[in-house]
Image (cartoon, rainbow, N blue to C red):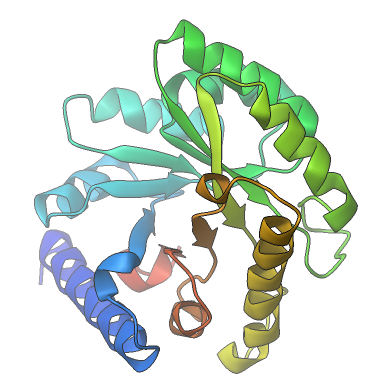
Length: 232
């Protein structure tokens, strides 16, 4: 089986798993968006996934993503930054990505917005939330969230549309469920505090080993790499 055929088959299987998980939760499968995480894989692999009908791709590093963007010009791709965003890369990210899922500091909002405005583009932003207090992970603490939303209220081209989280690594996918519920609870508390609901429509959570659990707990975006592209 060629790499292209394998990617097509894996995409179909992941979509089927998404549909089954959504059905178990009484949800419309169309309410869940699949972001294929193509980090470390070459542009040819991205092209194969596009040929299989996929259009949304996630990258961890800005520089690697920019190279792939240049190598796939003209393809109908929406690029998501799902890895940590360093402040010195914010302007580059704001000018080229369609979605930045990893904003964890109010200071990132202004350069993202400025770059998107200068590029005459609209940028969607998700706020990465720290759910477990792991020193090796990024994310904003609960007390930092109001400042990030306040900064976003002043932006013109960059708009927050939801929250993202990366739970601690666990062997049993079921062990991630409390963290997915916790992100949903953060969303609900922000709504209760008066945050505009249009800024909280998305919950990005769940990866290859636990995305079905995440969907059962309300994920609207899942970030899947290995289950589509194979081991890195």
